[in-house]
Image (cartoon, rainbow, N blue to C red):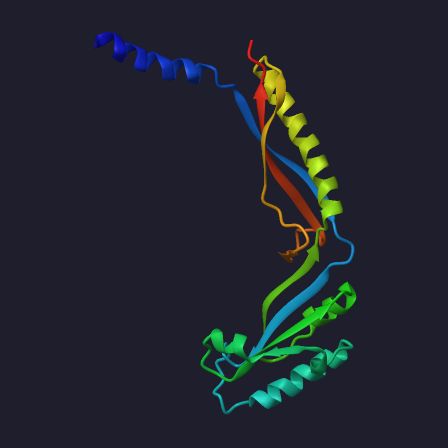
Amino acid sequence: MKYIHILILIIPMLVFGQEPTTITVTGRSLHYDKTPIFKGDVTLGATFSSYPETAISFEQMRSKYNEALKANGLELKDMTEDALGYALLRYNREGMIYRYETTSIKEFQAFMTATSFGVNNLNYGYEFIIDAQEAALLISKALQNASAQAQLIAAKMGKKIKGVVAIEDRNVIDKVIKKSMYYDHKIGEYFYEITVVFALENE
């Protein structure tokens, strides 16, 4: 019985020893969309004001905001109202969410800079779609990037890359991708990332 126990212990060790050494890296490629759809939401209401509700009515706030928009070449009629969205914010004063959508960065900037009493920024962003043809190109470039990284790491280990064991791609294709806007991020840039596992040659 002792010999049987010894064999059981040795076999898993032999199998484990045959497993190839691997390197896992993240490959990146850059997609730049020249024609994103810009979308922004603002809330209009006196929720964050210290004035009493009787100081200014919601209709007066709406009128003043419309004047501010007109000064920038826009109007409230260019916006979409989202009453349900405002209700879900659970503010305790009358108000509305106004949403603006455009493909023009100039018009979107006009929307963002229109200020008036009771207007608060909710979110600003843009949307775009990566089709299958563009995705194929991005994957190819990301794989090249991953391979270059893996070769550098392997060289430091005194080894060489044998081949790709697995690729993980969590990006979406032919579906809307939403990105928020920040002052330090270039609009339209999207880094397509894949995780690649490389096997190393056994010496």
